[in-house]
Amino acid sequence: MNWKQLQSVVGIAALSIGTTAGAALAEGELFMYNWTDYTSPELIKKFEKEHDVKVTLDTFDSNETLLAKLKSGGTGYDIIVPGQNFIPVFIKEGLLQKIDASKLAGYQNIADDLVSPAWDAKNAYTIPWQWGTTTFAVNTAIYSGDIDTYKTLFEPPEELKGKIGMFKNAVDTVAFAQIYLGLPLCNESPDDMKKVLALLESQKPHVKVYNSDGVLERLVSGDTDLHQIWNGYTVRARKQKATIKYAFPREG
Image (cartoon, rainbow, N blue to C red; front, side, top):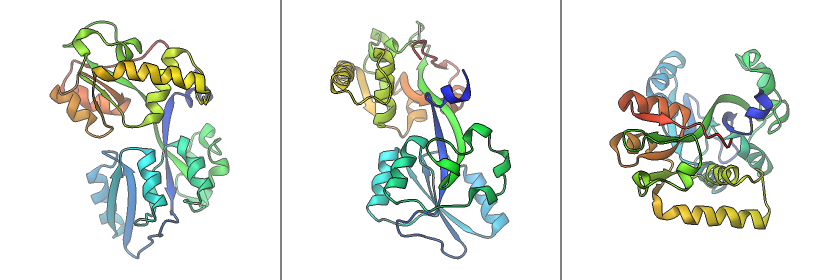
């Protein structure tokens, strides 16, 4: 699988510098809005010490939450971290300021395929920050069967019924359903969306929670035994509970 193909199944977080929703830019202060649990407290302390600046960090759990906050004209941020699929929306809504990314330190280290990506030509508004995969993880002490299929998620075995955690993020949830049903991604067909809805409704009685926050804690505590999750979170979860395993669905 090459990088262009990989972009369809991974999430890429991009740093966008300077929002127009009440620009911050206060002397000696940096206001950042990032995904929950994505910013190391130690890194913030180190940055504050090295650059003599106070960092204020707010967090969100979905691109939709980020978009709503900025459109409401709330507190301005110097840096926000949207997923790549929402960047064209933010640009169209006039919520981002242009940056001269080529002059930023480390720009020369960006992978060639992420320089001038489809969602932000010439990196006019953003620079890539990190990327990873998203599927789901299972506590194999509870269910030891085949987890490398979306059937485990959407048509769960008895051991997992009522113990499933799903993201509140509709983008990933719908994409999973489309892949399982063999439907095209980026799909607005009403008939196909009815099939997606029917699948999610049939799964709903077995879902304990729809929440993109607290994923790690729920899996480790046993509050859920299967949860939509990111690869990085799974590494952290396995350090606390070795029976947690990350799924690689064969459907895609």
